[in-house]
Image 1: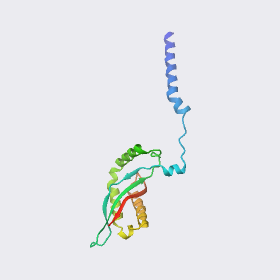
Image 2 (image 1 turned 180 degrees about the horizontal axis):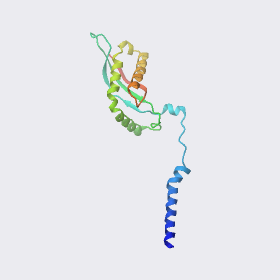
Image 3 (image 1 turned 90 degrees about the vertical axis):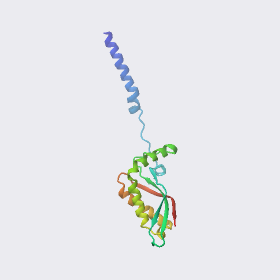
Image 4 (image 1 turned 90 degrees about the horizontal axis):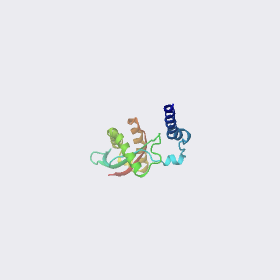
Length: 162
């Protein structure tokens, strides 16, 4: 009879611990996911891949070649909001992990960039409107070759023509 009381006491303690450490925090005190405003969503950081600076050929007369020195940052969509609320070191680390994830795709990314920019003349990329059109074309072409990630914005950190 004394053994039965001890077993019941142990079972009672285990059930109380299960309630306290699992059921209570997960069900009774569960918090609703945060609701973000449109402004917060628009201002939230996104996965970003910063590409190294390169010198690329522009379409030109072979006797007078033209070049562009370009550094590009590609900002990708974040449909699952994994980057929401990140900043500083945490954001930098998450972007480094994202860059490693995209490393197998870099040859495709650079091929698209080289091809699209190489089709442009210096006159086409010398104006603000021309550079904006180039960004849109790069975004469209990159999204055709990248199947798992979608480019949302293209930024030129450096854009020098010669």
